[in-house]
Image (spheres, rainbow, N blue to C red):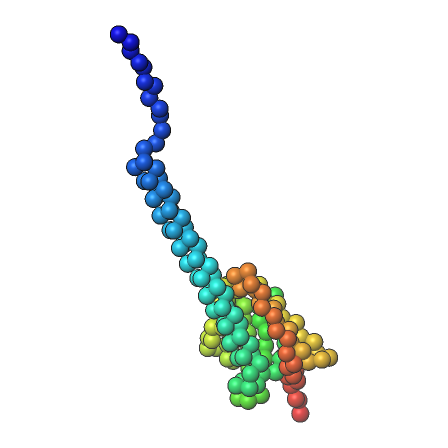
Length: 154
């Protein structure tokens, strides 16, 4: 009597292989869906910040208030303007990552949230106001002509 020893070959069964492929496919689909959602939200947030900046510049430079530059104290985070339309003083404040506008030191008009950095420069020779705002890593800049408010003493 001759005994044949059949050596058992080790490996994966078809069911195990199909299960692994299914788990891998579901994982890839979930990861791609999450990445798509994250990039969509990031683009939406960036557009929202850009719209906030455009609204901010429209308030400062638009005809609604007709603002004229008065002075600035960036150590206090303040820039002062005078409205030639309603003859009121306005203060642009930068504090605690927010930009807001105060009318006569009172009131509160929030303009931009999540501000990382705010810079403003005024050129009195060319009457140019340059704004630079950094919001969530994106930098927005604008330069416009704005008259300087001079007090008239008589």
